[in-house]
Image (cartoon, rainbow, N blue to C red; front, side, top):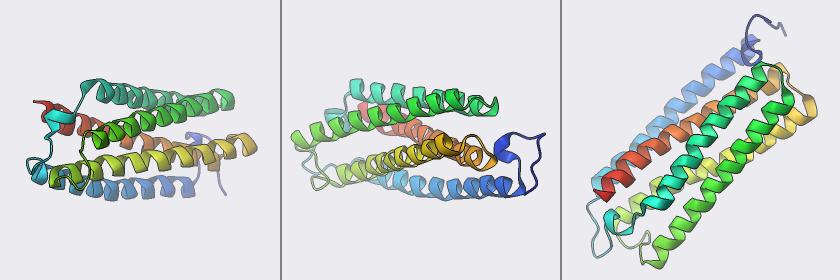
Length: 198
């Protein structure tokens, strides 16, 4: 395996470059998935039947908290990648760990939000609007859950093997995934919650 020391560690081999390219292609498929879910939501958002509309159940407090948490996690994952490029394993692991804790906090707030909706009689079976809402938010939440598990596995590998071209590549690809989830959340915040509250 030929290593190019003039490049960041995550790009330092041909295999690593191809893996990053492959992951960008995978993110293209993820964009198609979320685009479909957003389209379904926009088609069904006014089909509330006898159930509540978004303006009746959305609360800005939890949504703002979720947004702040995810934006902060995007910042910390960026700091983690920067620390990795500087060769600081401890700082990289710390920032990635903070990112994962923030991911768990986001999931906690989202679960509480879902429980509140259900107590208010807003379930997937109540209306087409709520079905599409729960599907969109649930898919994003499932991605964050998977990201937490994936990030934990990467931290265990970095702890065991240190910062190698392989662990750096995995860590960088994970950071792309995490940033993608943050971008998707910005669309959810803007076009689901803010629009729904108007």
